[in-house]
Image (cartoon, rainbow, N blue to C red; front, side):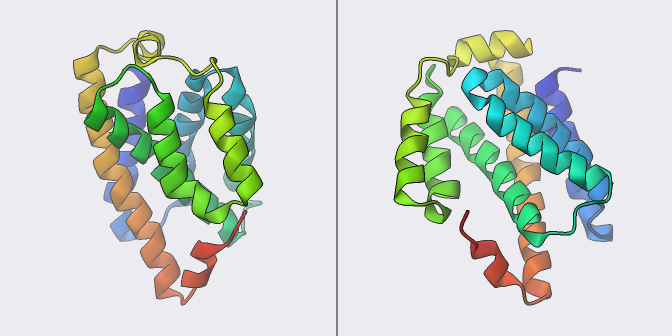
Length: 180
C-alpha cells in the first residue's frame, strides 16, 4: 500500500469511527501518516514535521490534554486538505501555489504579519519539490494520486467538522480562534 493510500485509508477509518466518539489513538494513527507525508516536502519542512511528531507523541503517551493542541492538529489536517484541493483544481507541477493558498486560508488568519511574510518566503525556497518529483518519491502515478487525494479530502473534511462540532458542543468555539 502506498503512503498516500495509507494516509487516505487512515482518515477514512477515523472519519467512520467519529460517530462513536473521538478516539485519540485513531487520531494519532491517522496523523502519523501526515507527519510522514510532510517529510516529502523537502528539508525546509523538517521543523514542521518534528513539531507535528512531538504533538503526536504527546497524544500517544497520554500527556496531551491541551485543547490548543487539538486545534493545531485540526488546522494541520485542514492545511493538507487544501493543498490537495489546490493540486486537484490546478493540476500544476509546482507545489508553491497550493502550499501558499493552504497557508493563507488555514494558518495566516492566526499568525502575525511577520509570521505570514516568513511563511511566504519559506515556500519560495527551491527545496519544495515539484509535483512530478513528489509523485516519484511516493511511488504514485498522477491517476492513483488523484484518487487517494480525493479520498483524503472527503474524509478529512468530515474529521475537521467533527472536531469543530466537538468544541462547539462544549461551548468552546472561542478556542478554535486562538492565535499562534
